[in-house]
Length: 540
Image 1 (cartoon, helix red, strand yellow):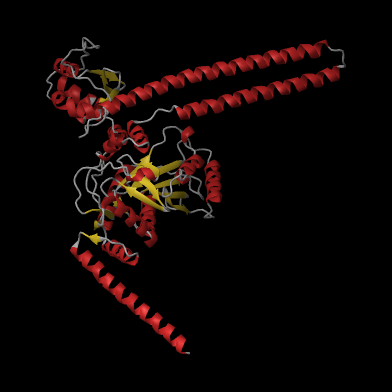
Image 2 (tube, one colour):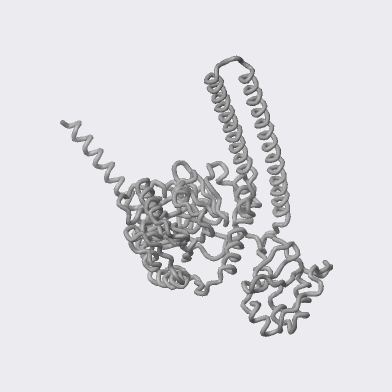
């Protein structure tokens, strides 16, 4: 599992109410919010608890740092625990970080491939009103993650116990956006040559061949690419820190040509999708063109909105001036004119308020309509609109084996299906690795192209609906993988609903056949009892 504290860089951004509103918003998804838990508040009611936490934070007027800790616990794909286990794990993380007794909201999200818990903790203690900021939190969190993985049999993840925020941020950017970062590109393309440089001249030549320049910045070095994107040198590798480089190469000697001429053999960093077994060049070019067009349209629209706002304000000022001149010219008493001036001023302020309000609404609408989309977000948007190529790119990003409950075909190849089975259903969302969530009747289906994913505690009625979808998608011969209780339950549901299904697993198929025989015997006995009852009634 992965646990991390989401940093909030400025206190202005720390809004506990806005955070809870985001975490508890279902976003038109039937399974986004699975559980909301309130801890250490006088009331379990969400509204009352939120007001209580906000009041507690406001009572501490001395703290200058952020008063909210946003902790996220994410579990491996397909691995899901009961709510009782999740709540116990959540409490252990809060205790190890020193937040025992602190007020918090815990929200379980299940709308992605990885079950995850958002924990919004009030750093202000409800009784002492003092703020608590955990020290060396990354070490405590990493150690507890390892213990949780061992105790609950979860997939082991390599947890970092060294605080290297720049490197971690770059890795997260690549994972979340699917686009190669400058830090990752330097590690893959240039780091080996950089380490073998014996002097500053050789280092500058190596960097020049990769379209890079090293510069002093603050107390260290930065590597700057040809497109002015920069990264801290020590975040690429500790051997590139200022202390290590000056110890190995001597005092820093700047490059004689800070702006290196572009040569045909010079490698250049360009943000592009990470290497994929599917050619994404055409899709990425279209993505860039659409984002460029959207940015241009947004800029033009904002200019027009500002011009229209200024024109309306200018007209309102002219009309207000005309009214004042008319009031000035009429023959009336001092008090009467004063009342007329006040009325005209109120009308002017109301008009200005309406104009600015309309401008803000139009501005926000334009900002939402023409907002910049990330590469993976754009692919998901395209896939939701029926672009099979975009869906295939998302599904090709999947790595590792899925371990959860699943229903699939007997012969399951290594490729990903891009069939349009779900196109006739209402698609709720598509994740960044191509898992499609859509509605089939009243049941939510999760389809990653190779399998139908079944969540724990799914009702028998929902399992019957999922099996019907599997029949249409894969045929009557199915492979069932997951826990033993899930597999047996699938066989029971198939027999109970008299579905013409066979299973790939021999033991499970034998169990299904036994259930079928028992079902036939019970049906025959039931028919016999009905006939006997009918005969006895006739004799009477």
